[in-house]
Image 1: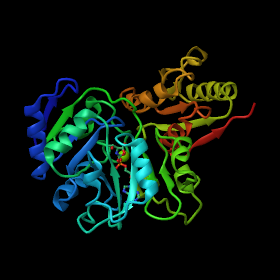
Image 2 (image 1 turned 60 degrees about the vertical axis):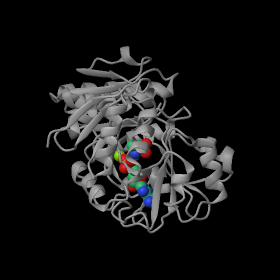
Image 3 (image 1 turned 30 degrees about the vertical axis):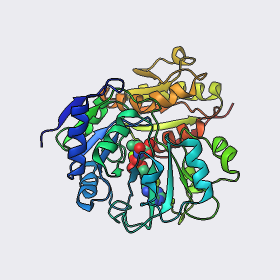
Image 4 (image 1 turned 135 degrees about the vertical axis):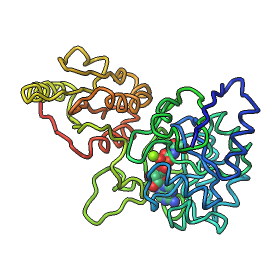
Length: 352
Ligand code: TXA
Ligand code: MG
């Protein structure tokens, strides 16, 4: 399949290109597009065949459900069997934006889209290109992150092209996304709302709007045997660069020291090692490859750069990657959740 790549500037949208992408989506094709979180791989979410194509293009297990993307509350009502007052309050506070809510689904939503579940994930993105595309398609758009299953999510069109060129109908290049981490997922389908995947909308912000919010323990990566995460996608290895990655936790000083030691050991074994560090620690390392995710003073920048840095290691031919941790900021829940998974839970606790 030849993949058509079109550039769309969010400030001067090419209406003809939007119309064409909408038509492809409506008629069952696949279009990748920018959202404010990461690039999504879109298909008509009410069409089983179209949704099935997403799983095939990503190599995604069919039990891992998709998020439906909408543009306004009127589009939510036909999809969700019940919308609680707390869900209304969350929508009011954070939509359009980087939050996904889980509802009991209606019969309109096919089980192919929900990975066989009786609940459905819905998000109302704020990115103007995403919104224009959904409107042009005239249907809810099922869209997972537009990466090959297991790889870091795409934050720019070049990442989508790496993974999806030749596998989908169209890639809409809207430049770099703003946030760089996927949406916060909160289950409002029953009882106390529960966060299934941490994201840009923090627990603190959610609690300010609806009071008590719990966290699905499995989403923290502390999975006891037999405990299944409520978001099926959270059980898979994810966001992972090709080289084996180890995450060093502890104070900045202790982890820098431990990483320096690991680098020396890797060099002695003839291994090419890479480091994920910050502006503050960059000069502390002698390493074949060093990638800076930004300054510790700017967690939003760290979130924004993380996936690009993880992907960039794949082109460097490194054997192993050592990463610092980012535990001390409002976005650390979201950032560390992704890093722990990228490291396949290989974590070194660093002592002072
Ligand atoms: O920011 C985002 O959410 C991006 C952009 C494109 O919108 N999308 C995204 O989709 O991250 P994806 O497919 O990569 O991740 C969706 C997650 C998976 O972990 C999946 O298991 C979970 O949402 N999920 C979807 N429907 C669910 C449901 N009904 N119940 C529980 N978890 C669900
Ligand atoms: Mg994903």
